[in-house]
Structures are given as C-alpha cells and as structure tokens.
Image 1 (cartoon, rainbow, N blue to C red):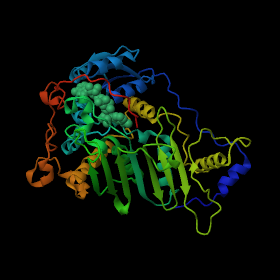
Image 2 (image 1 turned 60 degrees about the vertical axis):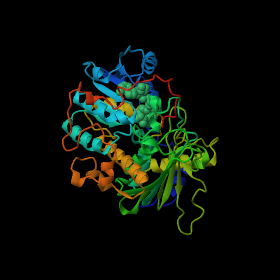
Image 3 (image 1 turned 135 degrees about the vertical axis):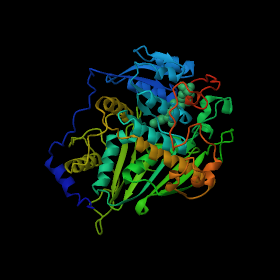
Image 4 (image 1 turned 90 degrees about the vertical axis):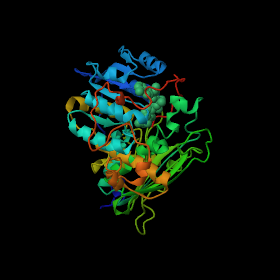
Length: 486
Ligand SMILES: NC(=O)c1ccc[n+]([C@@H]2O[C@H](COP(=O)([O-])OP(=O)(O)OC[C@H]3O[C@@H](n4cnc5c(N)ncnc54)[C@H](O)[C@@H]3O)[C@@H](O)[C@H]2O)c1
C-alpha cells in the first residue's frame, strides 16, 4: 500500500497557483417527466423529516401518508402541496394502486412486517435503519427480497450516500491511510432520550423499551457499524461489550450507556461508545458535539462527522510522520472539506491554503470527490427515487441493511448475556430447528414473524401482518420534540 510520497505535490500545487480543479457543478435535480408516486408510513419525527426532504425532489410525488396517530398524520400532510391521501391502516395504503414506492419510518418493531407487506404488495421500499429487529427477521427478509429482485429495497444508512464518506473510503482503498487497522466511533448525548408521560403505555416512548427497541445499539451505533463494515469491506467476526442502565432511573429498560468492541478479519477493530450523560466529542478539536468517528491507518488518520441541515460535514486528515521527517507535516489535521476549492492567495490563511492543496493533491490522484454540498439524506432519497426508475441496486441495499441489523442484534446479546458473540451464531439463530437453536436465543421472546426456513407470505389482511402494537391504544402523544437527525 502506498503512502503519500511527501508534501512536494501539495507544494507544487500551491506554487503553480493554477486554478484548482473544480468539481462538477452542484448536482441539480432536474424536473422528472415521470415522478415516482411515493407514500410514507410513519409520519413521526423522522417520517416528517423524510417527507420534508422528499418534497424538495421533483423526481417524486407524495400521494399518500399513513400514521396511526391522527395528529402526526395531519401535521405532516399539512406541510405538503400534493394533497396526499391519509391512511391510518398501512394495509389500506398498500392496497392503493397509485402508490409505487413506500418510505417506512416506523419504530423498529414494525420495520419487518411493513417492509414484508410492502414487498408482497409489489411496491419498492425505503426502510429506515435499523432494518430489522429480530434474528428470524434477518433470514425471512433475505429470502423474501430474493423472491422480489425487481423491487428496490433501500435502507436509511445515509452515510453511504455522503460524497466525502465515499472519498474517505476511496482514500482507504487506495492506501492513502496505509493499512487501516482501527476505527473508533461514538455517539454521546446528554440527556439523550427522555421518558415522556405514560411510560411504556405511551407509544412515543418506544425507544426506551426492549420489547420495541434495540436501544442505543439499534438507533445510534447502527450507523457507525455500517460505516465500519463498508470501510473495512468486511463483517465482524465477533463482538464483546458492556452495557449498563446506570443513570436514567425513569422506568426504561434499555441500556443508557454501551461500550462495544467488534473484531474484523485480520485483527481490525471497531470500538464504539454511546453514553447519555455527556455530549463531548474529543475528535475534530472538540468543535462538534455528539457523534463522529476516527479512521486510523499506518500512514494516517481521518476524523470525520456527517453534516445535516444545520451543520456542515467536517473531516480532518492527519498524516503519520515519516521517519526522521518532522517538518513536512502540518502540526494539525488538514481539513479535507472546505467551503471553496480555489486558493485565494490574498485572503486564505495558511491552514486554508494547506487544506485546499491537500484536496487538490487527492483530486489529482482521482481520490477526492467534489465537496459535499448537500445533506446526504437528500442524496439517499434522490438515489432511491432514481433507482426505482432505473432498477439500479442501491448502495445501502438489503444485504447492507441485514448485515447492520445482524450486528445490532448480536451486540445486544453480547451485552445482555455478558459474553463474546460470534457472528456465525446468526446462521442458526431464529431458525426453527431446535437442535441448532442456541439456548440463549431460544430463551428470548420470539417475534410474531414466522421462521426463516419458510418465510411466511400472509395476505395483507392477515392479522399477523400488523406490527405488534399497531392495535394498541395509540395515545396520540404530543409530537415528540425534534431530534438531531443523524
Ligand atoms: N436514518 C436516520 O438518520 C434516522 C434518524 C432518526 C430516526 N430514524 C429511524 O426512523 C424510525 C422512526 O423514528 P422516529 O424518531 O420518527 O419515531 P417516532 O416515534 O417519532 O415516529 C414513529 C411514528 O410511527 C407511527 N406508528 C407506529 N405504529 C404505526 C403503525 N402500525 N402504522 C402507522 N404508523 C405507526 C407513530 O404513531 C409515530 O408517529 C426509527 O426506525 C428510527 O430508528 C432514522
């Protein structure tokens, strides 16, 4: 694996003063002649966020919304100019012939059943992360997706759609960071999720209860586990972890802090931390709170975090010093995301010039993509609509989603059972073969979803098609406060 030779090329780039290679113009969303008629099921905090972002794309047209909570449904419908039909029962929406594609932003416990029914109804699916909740759902959805190869199934793992995450992936693949051995990621919040009145009876508290939620692992770690799978081009071999419910004594039963270590082939590791008592992020010069990751290789490291509607993406590239060479390397990390690419000799600071040169150096090697000028949530949704029309396979496809869900499921088992969990366990877990079913798995509550050995294909109207709590009293809680959408 080659290491960047020296800073000579960066210097040369600066000395020539040549105009830096400009990236392609901003991606423009062209008016689509045949917009995808889509619906959104689950119009809570994230569903309404997705609706808001989908509404910016003229390659799609929202024809229907569904939520059991009338207020969430009405509030979201009001933000649209397309006058969508409103459904409280998702099965009625799926029977609507107008709907070609469905975005699912339900609580985790409902993902599998609604995704399954959407595929069975012949429609394309975008389902939020984590894709599925239980081991048996991993097997069932894999089999079902294989039976519906012409339908798009994309998962809401938006980092895959970030152009600068893609750039760092390319840096890794080209050996710019040497051999990447470790990734550390964190999502630290304070206070994080809070208990709303009503405890477990309030559907708005679903994240806080194991019956409905995979806790911090499913909601937060899922994103970074997927990045590690992608950056390492591998899946973990085993996971160990410690989780605790040590601070928030409010009736929740999910962990309020988790520490996980994933071992990948050739000893590579992802270490992960999520806590709910301090939002400090020690990377990126502590300029950003909560979440981010650092990718560490023998020739350098990158610290990075995702942008959203309110904050730009940030990434710093640190080169490992070469033996005997202490002068050619900047003492600080070089930003590889900057607001402009042309050097302004009069006004740019030394650091900005350095960062632009670094970008130029990478770009000349075919590594650096145009800078991120869009929220990757927009990019992933635009890509979904485009794939629906073209039939192209999504970057975050069903296998990406199932690998991610598998990691979430096994991580929670590692912490709950305080043991090292091999990823091979998923092969027999949740499959109705008593001899092959691990004791620990057998002891866990089984999903309403049938076995992987023969994925069920119930009619849409079958009672089992309902998510476990769909029939529960939906107390129509006040709409939860907006969360930072990762
Ligand atoms: N990719 C990301 O960055 C990201 C960010 C936030 C949330 N999410 C995911 O989005 C999903 C939703 O999260 P949220 O924060 O919006 O939760 P939420 O509780 O705010 O919203 C869920 C909505 O689903 C509705 N619902 C529940 N059961 C239903 C049913 N059977 N039929 C129709 N509607 C039903 C609820 O009434 C509620 O309005 C979760 O899976 C979460 O992990 C992803």
